[in-house]
Length: 220
Length: 301
Image 1: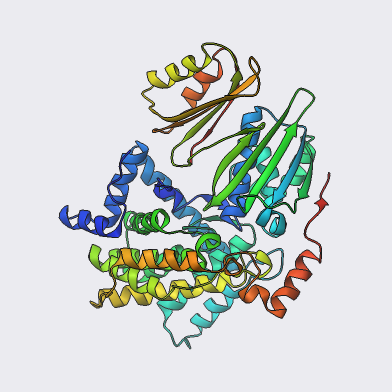
Image 2 (image 1 turned 180 degrees about the vertical axis):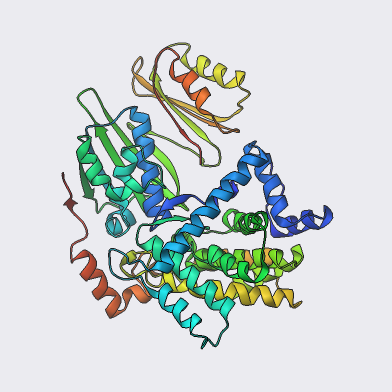
């Protein structure tokens, strides 16, 4: 079951004109912003396939910037997100790439500030749904069938156990889980697909656990 | 995480055996899957309905897209309807104008509710607000209209596709028109099986519909396909309510749509390389909107 909720069919509420090119694009931007954990100072956005061809007409550019400013798909400020970005000091650049990617609607977002840089590749799969396929060089294999939790953490003993304990105590069942790291002792990433929707309270509990750097959910 | 239904056959069987409307089965499945409360789910759908109402209202005042390709047609159709000269009838034209209104708002970057996508967002609300004047539904019945549409859309999305890039416009406006037809039947007092018949009748007449947006934008021909999708939904619902049945079962019609989508060349699946997008005028409009160059670096602030 690729689509689970009736609100994926009747919804999302969004600023037009395209669910895959506008709403899906905004969601990719927003997941990047959430995972970064704060307002980035600069962004370099590479667009591929159909995104590269039609992003201006579909306002995918203002939508992605809106997402980077933490706006939801229905936030009217998406329309003026370029001006809003200037106000908060976010500079950005769009690069339409000719390279063919496996999915026609692919965006690679590189964001950063004076402290760190993050890179995320997302695809917009239709009807406003999106998937993250790569984070900081880690390929992700999210089925998209379940709500997912992305946790960036330090590669050290006990972190995975702490996170799964937090989920267990709230009765959240893990459907699929992957852990990857770049190098021993460096940054690592947990991708956890779960059966139930994850509420903010649980997110906040996990966020304050030791050695957790960033956390984000992909609920739909 | 099991579901109550994954086919129209199962959906109708559940509704019939439990003597419940299709909308109720959809609500129960939503509770089962998301573990949210009924009140929460109804409230969200009520909010979606409000967004639809506001979009129609805005579109009927007249909007224009930034590309200049679309806008203002909803107003024209409403005025014509009010002149009393309409041939196809007021309910159909009202649905058509409201479907167009919604999609003109979408093209103008207004707020809409994707049903099932933004490109096809006019049909379900357009028909709902047109039949509302005839059937005088309660707020609850209007909300249920959306759940019934959603139930059929859920089956299509999981067994075929609701995206033009994957399945052509038959998957977008085709699905939306068929979903709306099924919902009209329920609101008009028809049976769950009649909803399924209406769905099939409309979907059969949307099969093969290509997705060929001019300049790749959700404007031409999308807005007018929303208009016709709404008209077909009403006619299909009336046919089913009259007792007409589809010789091909609904799930097989959906499967046929899926196979047709898969065998469609990519030029006809939202790439703007075929169909109307590839006509001399379509190409000229693309050049006018985007200029000759579409690939390269841009927009630094």
